[in-house]
Length: 222
Image (cartoon, rainbow, N blue to C red):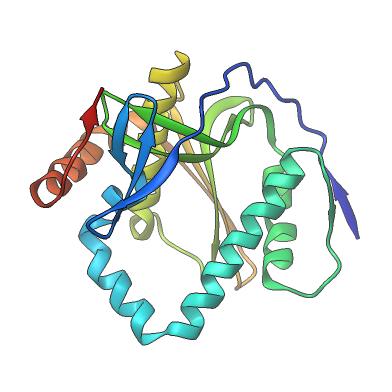
């Protein structure tokens, strides 16, 4: 089975690349304006011990889930880039992609895809999955694979990540994304779409950053 996307791209903004570095076991990025902690490190800080314990207790499942996520993102990225995607082998990431495809096909006018972003004001850096119109409304879009379906309250860190990307994109490009969109396919056969307002997570993100700063080195801005 072959799938080929038919998406318009409006990538008028091309930021420079950023380099990943590690400081005291945490992920940072060297950007053109300084060294900033990664979005995922900051938004996942309070649950880091819980995640580490689960990975330690479930090494095989942890490896499987990580591989599934990497492969799923690559399939979606290729599809959104209008490359030919072969869906032949029996794999969870292929099943999840086909499950999510109906919602992915509602995306268009793509501004950014796996694009490096950073911000002096927010003090973070990372790579955003996708910034595009979903149902004709500009959103920060994140694609997730899951073993089971989720409730909105289970994935607040996803919205915090997307909020950070929204603020960074606005600083770099001048374009505002008022919506956050999480498209999630679960191995139970359900595709979920979560849509939230960016503004509802700005204060929560600020509190996450404050907590992280208590225990870690923070930006050195040029």
